[in-house]
Image (cartoon, rainbow, N blue to C red; front, side, top):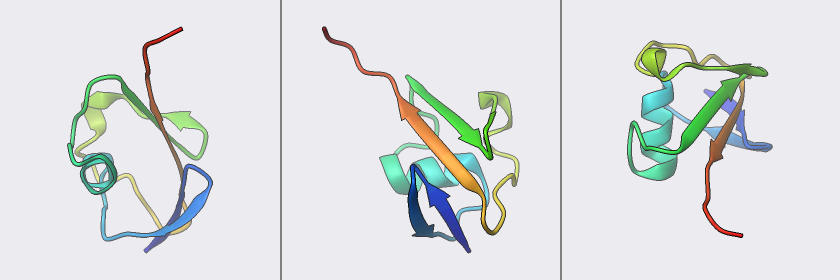
Length: 67
């Protein structure tokens, strides 16, 4: 399926947020990460549910420390 991830088209086999994070970040439940699908924040408690669909717009935000 093709989704938009952080503003770029991405062809993926991922069906869950956890699968997508595994593909993109190498970990399925990393600390300091927030995910939104189609503008709605996805709680970490449902990252293993099949939420991704063709055409979804996914934003992955990673917290960084510094000044």
